[in-house]
Length: 300
Picture 1 (spheres, rainbow, N blue to C red):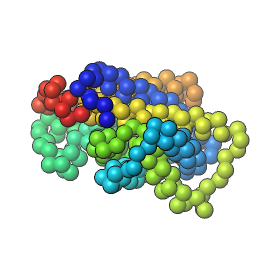
Picture 2 (cartoon, rainbow, N blue to C red):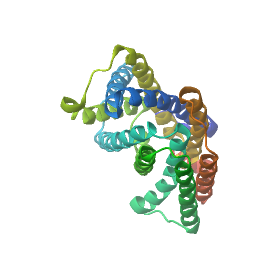
Picture 3 (cartoon, rainbow, N blue to C red):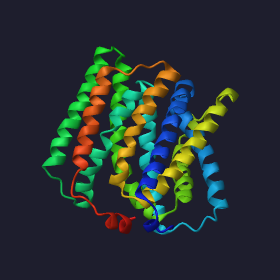
Picture 4 (tube, rainbow, N blue to C red):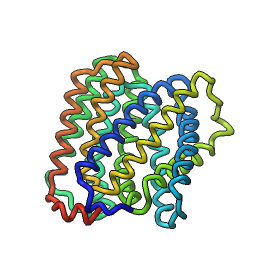
């Protein structure tokens, strides 16, 4: 793996932001696919294609034998991602994109709490206060959803996205460990393969080949997902997860613009307000003991 001492943290931040941008565009394609063919088939066919693309890239890059530790992390993250993606895309088809993304912003804060639980890290008053503030932001978004009368399915969709955010918080912790045990190509390929294998378990009952008109969207979504995993895997291998977490918030802009352009969705003032509260809470909680540049490089 390339020595991160010679790489600027700003470069890792820019690469991570690019990965989030590609993921956001992929979300728009997936929302369209879920509305047309359902969440299971949209995710199954996209993931199968992503596995083929990722496998080719991994092989061309001289794919090495996968270590036991890396395989365990691939399996753990792949399992988390499967459940997370099914919940998220099911919910995304039922609520505006900007609102869905705003609700996921509780994930970085939850990651801090999970870090305390799983890794024994200290949780101070700052994180506790931020947790209550973030919950208030979620309440503002859900209250606005009720006033807009989006229907009971929208409320269920918001609940699914919140459940997905909890899994995403655990995903962030595993992603950092995974990026230190495997290269970006391996992560992009093996993670997609694990998800595909899990989804294929239900194929005899749920799989339906998509209409030919759907395949171009599936191909683009697969390419975007693979490229995003590669960029994020590279970035998380060269900088601290906490340093890169702020790039997650750029997805709100993408979601608002894509939701408006592709689905005619408008961003409710309550969504803007709630997202602002959640982001501020997460940034406040993240301002813990500073890490020196040298320590950052050594950890990466």
